[in-house]
Each structure stands twice: as C-alpha cells, then as structure tokens.
Length: 59
Length: 376
Image (cartoon, rainbow over all chains, first blue to last red):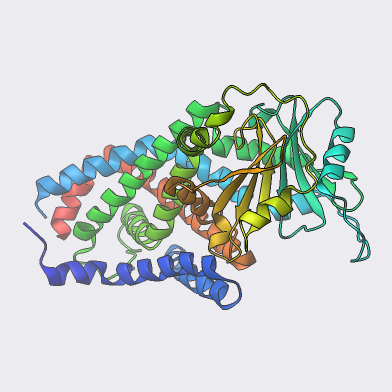
C-alpha cells in the first residue's frame, strides 16, 4: 500500500526543503568566494541549527 | 506502509548501521581534527615559516629547486613538486628512496622558491595529525584498509537510505522536529535520532559518497594508468631506462603553452605513479573556482622535453577531483569548517543514539515496531 500523497508531503515536506538548502549550500561555495561562501554557510547552517535546537531544548 | 514492509526496512536499517557504526565513529572522530589540520599545524608550530622577503626578490628556476631538494636529501629521488595558492613563495616537495616508492614512505617538506632553503613540515611525516590521517584513510592497513572503509561507507549510505524510508511511519502522526521530552528517555532519543538524522541527511550522504570515492583513489589511479597513460606512453615501452633527466627549468612554460589558461597544480617526476618512466607529468588545473579541482596532465618527454600528449581526463578522475573539497569541507572559509565539524558531531550523536535505541529495544521486550504501529 502506498502512502497517500498528502501524508507523504506532510512528513517529508520540511525535510525536502532542508535537503535542497543543504545541497545548494554544498554546491555554492564550489562556485566562488564571498557571497557564494555566505550562501554555503546559510545552506549548511539550517540543518546544524535545527538539529542543535532539538538536542538542546528542554521542557 | 504494511508492517511487514516496515519490518524489512527496519532489519536493513538496523544491521547496515550496526555493522558500520564502529568504523563510522572512528571516521567521524578522526575526521574532526582533520577538518582543522591547517589551524592545528599553526598552533603546534608545525607549519613552515616562509620568510618575508621583498616582493621583487627573484625566484629560483625549477632546475635550481631540483638541485636544492637533492642537496637537502642526497641520494633520494624527487617524486613531486606541488604548488599551493596560499603559499606562492614555497614549493611543496616530496622525495623518497626511489621515484616509485609508496606514498607512506615518502618525505614531505617545503622549499623556499626564492632561496632554495628547505623548510620542514613535521606534521606531513609523522606525529598526531598524521596518525589521525592514517586512521581515517586506511587504519594503517594499506589498500585493504581503504577498501574496507569504502565498504563501510557503502553500508552507511544504505543505512541512511533505509533510515529515510523508516522516517515516514515513525513521523506520520508527529509534527516535524517534535521531540517528546516527557514520555521516556527512549522516546526522546528516538525523536532526536529521527530529527538529527533527517536534517543532516544530505550532508551525510555527500560526505559518505565522496569518502567512498576517495577511498577508491588507488584503484581509480590504477585504472587511469591502464586506460589513458599506457596508450600514450606505448611508444616508450621498449626504450632504455633514463640515466639522465633533461633539466626541469622550463617544464611549467612548456605545459602552459599546450594548456593555455590553466594553472600548474603539481609536477610528477619520472617514475612515479602519476607519470611514466620516461616522462615528467605536469598536472594543470582550471582557473575558475569550479574547474580548479579538475586536473589535466601534460606529459613531457624527460629527455627531449617535447610534449608527448595532453592527456584526456576520464570522468572518474574528475569525480575524484570534485570529491576532495566536498569531503574535506575546506572550500568555504572558517565558518564552513565550523559547520562541517558541527555536522560531524551531530553524526556522532545519530550513530550513538542509534546504538542506544537498539540496545534499549533489545532489553525491553517491547520492540520499537510495536510502537510505530501504535503511533501509525
């Protein structure tokens, strides 16, 4: 049985956006310095911050 | 997803991860200092101090540098000269007992390009950082070690893919980034394992795959020697071994003439695994950011100094070239290195929590699966 489409995107929507940001970040810094480096910091910063936030949050 | 399907993926995820976890932990831990090897070398005073001289100080030509190297280590053979953008006044020099000596028995140092003075680079030849590097690259086990780690990398990729498939049934009823703090330690770590795993997914896949490619470098280089190099040097097959090399003085000019717009990356002296018995090979890199990772070898006859061939770059050598920055994380300044280290640390958390979840699930008779099904 295939998961219903809405269900799939409900679960994988946000992770897909994060994955695209990470991939863009990894690629950006290969293209140049300055603004390209900054883009890579943004792209790699998003997963790092989200993971750390989950890890450090306490009730 | 049927519970039988989930169980199958769960089996794949559990066992691929468990088998590779110990090695992945080793790679993640030794990789951490390697991200900052440049900074650590400076801190430990292992980085060579290239003298400040007036900008117009004349530079030695390549043959003079060859002689300086031979004076520094008499009786040894030159293997490579490397050129680094961030140290234009020095030439990275690698020498060994014979040109064909394997890389781990070579001696690396730098030559001041203006004075010919030798500057030692201790961390390239021994000590803490080299130990970290060897543990990371081949666990001191040579080619079998590299291939074993490549296999562990492949298992890691399968673990990531199967983990992503399992993310769906686990998260169906939960909002993204939910971490249940109040139920049990196990649920908290299950949620953290899922959250950190899914957000670091792309980075881990890229570092994993590029690591596997780098681990297969020896095989790729051997394939390149078989495919491209052997055809180009075929006419030299029966030529007698060289007793005297033509001077290296003009090698870079000769290479630049046939590879216009490119920059020299390194020179392989005759007899190494990047050259032939009868050729210098000058490896030229592209001059844009992206193409600076792609190398084109120019083969120069070591007795006549005529260009024998500008070698084609097979796709797998390009893949190897692009894998390096994407694995090292050294192409986006210090903030990128810090992010690389953070993501590396987060991977350690995912590995550790994975083992913890497996242990807890075995100890408590209640399998994780039941839990998924009750949640789903």
